[in-house]
Length: 441
Figure 1 (cartoon, helix red, strand yellow):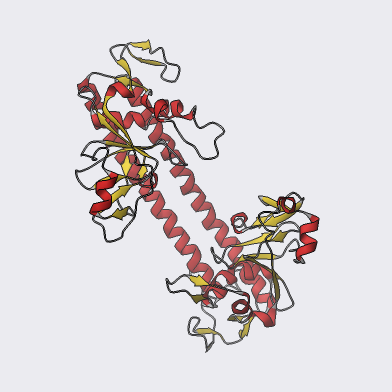
Figure 2: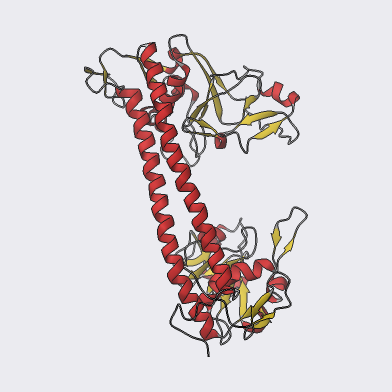
């Protein structure tokens, strides 16, 4: 879409904004709208959280409109605090921690102190502010010594920006509603594709390690419910027999050091057959030696997450003398009759994951017992077939991962396009009045 610029511009006097349409006026938040902030009851006052009043936190924001909140507060807490109600239709803006999250209040509610509630006026259309304030207000933020943006009520009141008339604001908001909906639809399609690719990846792994590659192979009942039928010439074993070593991690947090030359493998660094080296934390040699005191990690060893939201993922160690276990991780070394890469793929299969789920049902923080893991039931094809299946899975998952990467890149580009379009429209770098069928006179 090619959109024109406005016929005439002027200097806004704001270094971050530059030129704006000549009929727009430079103003400040305090001159165009009012806002209020919320409050958090003391954590020790449990009765304050037992009411029916909606109470929004930053984690509730994100959707365009929110009509429910994860937590509530009592009438008494609301009265004692003196906080103002955020009425239905008002704009909620996070100005602490995760700065710039916005949502409309879909019902009357209260908020915590990290959220500012904006009310519309004769000079400000909230649908325009929904798009503009994440840019305008953040541009007026200060920074801490680490470069993080900081906002407070004084900075919000004094935030300077340029505004067109309410009629033109409404036209811009309508244009952005239409265009961002199209972009969001394309993003949703890519996200759906990523989900389907993940399902295909898991199905491919699980089928290969439990059924093999020959669809004509005679099958037999494995005797294990979560394995079902397996090729008749395969054996069935347990992890403790398929390995020479099963080692749990040291149960203390590593002393991380950015200057260290050794890498710590955490659950965040492991996904389904992949070890993500970018973003790994580092430790010094002294800390490294402490972390490997039970057993060093060697090439072809397998690391496995047994706790937290990312439990159940396994990956293979690519080289010696570099890596050590972080918390929540385990280390396996394949026995002579078990091809290491096949063992790694089996640990990522649904048939193995289901066995660990027994320990995690109903748990707030998932945790699989070492004893359960040691007794995981696994298939045991002949060694040559283990290698063939591993080679097949390496090739197939690479294809799927390439498609996943393309979809992730498409989402990144679409989000960049969305942000650029919003910024151009709310700062007057493009004229969308004709595009919406509404002209500012």
